[in-house]
Length: 205
Image (cartoon, rainbow, N blue to C red):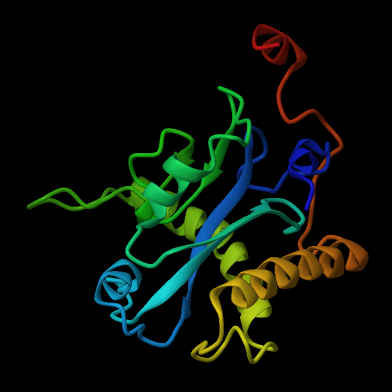
């Protein structure tokens, strides 16, 4: 997985042509409930209602190539906390953005859906924006499905050691990345042009 590949001049899509380079999501890997009470509390996910660990996948928004993975994370952690606590080592430029679901609200690097105001309704423009964002953000969900479905270890409850599961998850994501790169872009890409104008890039170098 090559994090810098997101700066590829062809990493552009039709509706988010510049500066929105990636999209991220987490997925749960269910594990058998541990006997240790405290470990059970750390693995119990309030969202999924099961004991699990989480993996986080990031892909290039244009071609859909995986370029980032982190995990396994504790199941009790929400997506935004996983990002804020574990991914600061990945350099995000001030002009750079990613797409995320509502779990990433509060992360300044992410564009998320516009929430419906209390007692009000969304405008037609806001609805159109949300649908567009969902369309492109769904690309990472497609890759997560391709990661889990063909691998019995990742689509069923894990009952082995944590170390082996961590190794399987990491190896599987890297093999998925290799597979996608060998196939070529999964979606239509546009370019080549810089992901950000040179004048803006120079301000942050």
